[in-house]
Image (cartoon, rainbow, N blue to C red; front, side, top):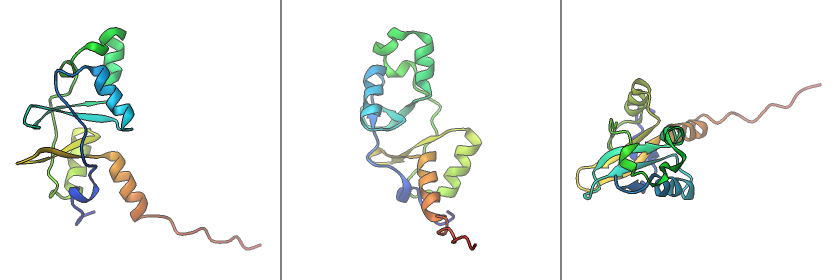
Length: 139
């Protein structure tokens, strides 16, 4: 993974929401696209935070009627982000150190352009280190 760049593993396009969208609508987008996070962006597509499936545990614990609450009330604002040209190994180390599972990929001109997750790393590693076919058992 030393020479692999984020751009080759990231998911794109990234799903985004604005801080004033409801957590119900964000959840529906996550279900519709089979993803576990959305990036919260401003009007210029610049990341302001992230809302993950883990955040929905807090939403459910707070109040079942919280579905109409704006995303901004629950999104994590302590955002770890990267660029498509960053080495995957460096991002993996950051994710481990910071305990995050989703890292938005940003571009200076376009804002949020992708997402790299622990699921992307697992998929890459499973392909890169696919086990050899099983050997026949001699009897």
